[in-house]
Image 1 (cartoon, rainbow, N blue to C red):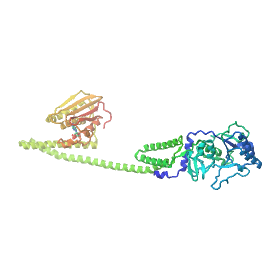
Image 2 (image 1 turned 180 degrees about the vertical axis):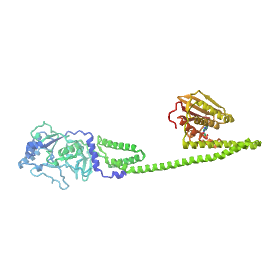
Image 3 (image 1 turned 120 degrees about the horizontal axis):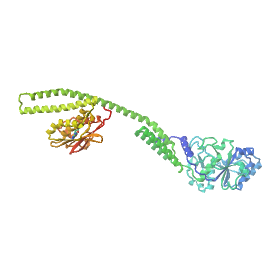
Image 4 (image 1 turned 135 degrees about the vertical axis):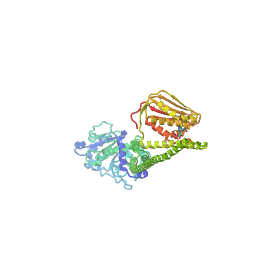
Amino acid sequence: MGVFISQLKLDSWESGLYDMRIRLLPEPPTSGHIEMIMVTSKTVENLKGLPTAKEQNLLLKSLEGEEPLAVLYAQNLDELQGTNEEKLAFAEEAQKFTNLFMISQDLEMKGEEGKLKLAAPLNTIELFPGPRTADKVVLALDEVTRRMMLTYQDRQMLHPYIAGIVNPEVTSKKNIRGVFEFFDSEQVYISYRKAGTYPQTSFEDIIGRKFEAGRFKNKIVLIGNDHGGSVRDYVKTPFSKDAKAMTLVELHANMLDTLIQNKAPIQASPWLNVIITILTSILTVHVLFTKKPVQSLTILAATGGALLVLGAFGFWPAGYWVKMAHPFLAIFLCYYFFIPYRLIIENRRSWEYYQKNKLLSQVEELKGNFISMMSHDLKTPLARIQGMTDMILKDTQPLSSTQREAVDTIRHSSDDLLKFISAILNYGRIESQGVELHMQSRDVNSLLKDVIRKHEFLAKVKRIPIEFESEPLFPIQVDPELMKQVFSNLIENAIKYSPEDSQVRVHSEERDGKVVVTVADQGPGIPQDEVTNIFMKFFRSKNAKSSPIKGSGLGLYLAKYFTELHQGRIFVESTYGKGSTFTVELPLEQGRSHA
Ligand code: ADP
């Protein structure tokens, strides 16, 4: 894509960006070696017509003592009015100047040398080709002169010759900055100043000798028209596309000054353009596919800005003209070309996500239904088993010791199974209907006492004393049944997972506006990688699963769920192998919103 874009012809855009730089960046100062003499509409009014040969003669006479370095006519002397004698006198006066030329718009081809001549008797005045080159090929079709010829078919043009008088460095083409080949000529770009930058004096002021002596000494004097009589005397510029934007004379002044100062802009290598274009294309596509829409727009706008700054800094002060149209187009084209792809990808992703979600919720529902159905159907036969075992145990007929042992085992196992089924049923109900809180003002210590009492038997069997350290607490708003389930689960786990002859400590206190209950045991502890999972539904640790300790993996999940309904918090601190401490924090002041 980038390579393709860099091959497009974008001359009009490029010239626009080039001109923008010329317009916006500070203008370099002039060399101060150029003076312009203008035939204005006022001159025509005063002289009652365009200057004749006689008046041109007077002009040269006024300039003679000033010893200018060169006198250049940007006027067509073939159109000069006057008698033969007057013209001859003017031509003779012209011979007194060392570098007096008329600037020719025409070129001499190889083999035609000497054909460019003024008509007699002005044929002693030399015509020197210094054409203006409308940019119909290099930059755009807008007829703005942005470049000048140094040579044509190896013949030197006027401007480098004249500039060489002031700055001998540029007499050798090797030393001229920014030279490029164009067909049969060598050229440079013009370093432009705005119209009206170069000093100018009116024709009649010169013949009336109304100028301070020495003004034209060692200057290059350009003579031309600014009377508005012909569009041929004007040019368009990078500053303005108006047909009369600048006088032809001042264009020549700009050309000469570019060479005198030897500051023509250098066009950066086309390779640089290709590379920058490819890089911007890659960046655009990358940003488009990896960043969020607003982010990618910001990044691309910043890239555009950076390109402008790069272009501006290249041009000023370094004098490098780095092309910018292609990278800019790359940003736009890549953006609009790839945005549909991005939309398609995103649409597909959200569709897949939606489908997966739908499937997941169906599975969840099925699971829920299955669990509650199954557990319900299990409960009835189980109740029957329990009823039968109770009957056997209560029977007056004594049982043999093996029989009694077998019936006891049946009784215990069915108890375990019932607990398990109840837990699952409980969970199923909560999942499908949610929980309603029945808040009452209760002392958490009394709830804890109830729970501990219930577990004393189990603890005694394993010879685990439950130590209860309580600080007096204010009653708080809780759902006693749910909170009892929470504490019951923690205490039951502590006893269940601890070895015989260890100890469980329950502690309660008020701290930082909260009731804090901790249940600590000296059991196996929880491995670090499982700590974050134990509050997830159905999660059982690897050790628990491989041990004979029974459980559903729902206890802690529900404990967390119920605690959070109370706007509380539950967490565990555990050292693997040394024991665990579960903490429940309940706010003293209940918030208003309950599930
Ligand atoms: P279970 O029915 O398996 O006890 P819980 O949700 O109550 O389910 O606990 C989840 C897991 O957390 C348990 O399987 C166990 O591995 C671990 N666990 C809970 N309490 C303790 C404890 N006091 N000591 C060690 N591990 C515990």
